[in-house]
Each structure stands twice: as C-alpha cells, then as structure tokens.
Length: 84
Image (cartoon, rainbow, N blue to C red; front, top):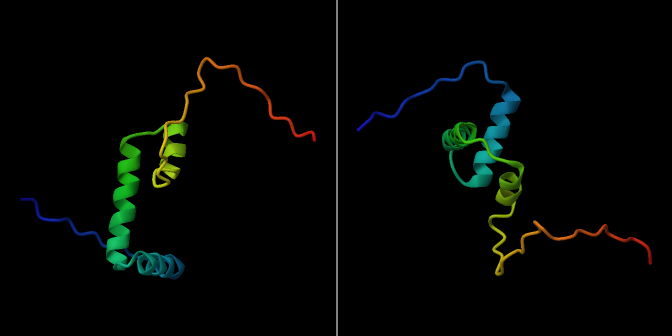
C-alpha cells in the first residue's frame, strides 16, 4: 500500500487561508480535507475535458428529474414570442 503524500504550502495569503477555513466549516470538515477535495476535483477535471453539455448537466445532477427530456435533434425550432 502506498504511503499518502504530504504537501506544504508556504506564503499563502491570509485571505485565501480565511476563505478555505470558511469553506471547510460550511462543508463540516477540516481545512486540510477542504484542500484535499479542491485539489482532487481540479486534477480530476483536468484529466477528462468535458463539453458544454456535460458541464450544464452536472449543474443539475442533484435535481432528480422523474421523466426523460425529449431530444431536439431533427425537430423544427420556433423562436419565442414575447408579444401579448
């Protein structure tokens, strides 16, 4: 089993540290865990570039739709009308 790596960050701005502490408190874990989560997310995002559709879908992943959304490909689209 691999030994976990350690990382020391020097010269971190006080405001960045303060914001990390606030984020950690909001998430209910330590500042160290907050930094691990941030680093893990950034590295994982870089490894698999996502398209715009995937980015938009990820914003709504936790909404919990109950039905399928029909595909628009091949359908005639109509401009919205804002007249009364």
